[in-house]
Image 1 (cartoon, rainbow, N blue to C red):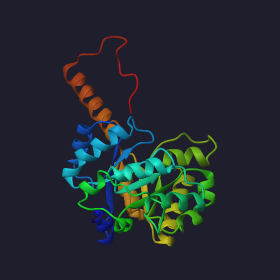
Image 2 (cartoon, rainbow, N blue to C red; image 1 turned 90 degrees about the vertical axis):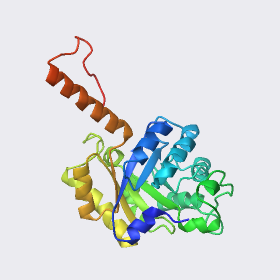
Image 3 (cartoon, rainbow, N blue to C red; image 1 turned 30 degrees about the vertical axis):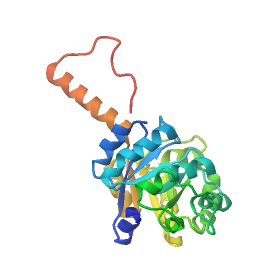
Length: 269
């Protein structure tokens, strides 16, 4: 079993990751057919749980896309269940120290490299065999999102067995700017760009992968130019909302038919 993300990086190419927040296997199947290198099922903030994760991974299988999962927290039970369901990598939020990073990594590795329990219920079927050799193929990606995480950046990045750091700019901004800046993707503020590039530099110095969550392809391309190895561009819910809003707007402009008072678009992305 080979992790295609590792093969892409070994060939010197960057990777494109998609994001799944809607707990539906058909949505996952549609996204998997669009040409992403990997897709992440979001168990932290997505509208889904483990009972949705497994059929989503099943729906993605035929595309060849690398299945990842972001877990809700640094908790061994859900990390191991996501791996047993077939995820080939785990993104873990809110890693604040080298000790927490090491603990997270241990959940993904079978002994003697970690403390993962053996029982790959679906993974053994989906990946055509499964055992301790998979230690080398499962990706461990830690999120740097807090001031503590930034303060301990070098220790986290140097954690043995950690494959990369994943930056979520919204929480990184909330966690380091004391409310001075609103959360969001595609940061342009000099201090945030400098911080993102500092995390990138820590990855490069330790020989691990740098990953960034982006809102637009243009910003993602800029991040690849900086040296990021993987960028996530938007996600299913935002893409659906954006395409639907554009379709409605175009129809109303072309027909001149305004919505009834009180029914105008109120929210969305």
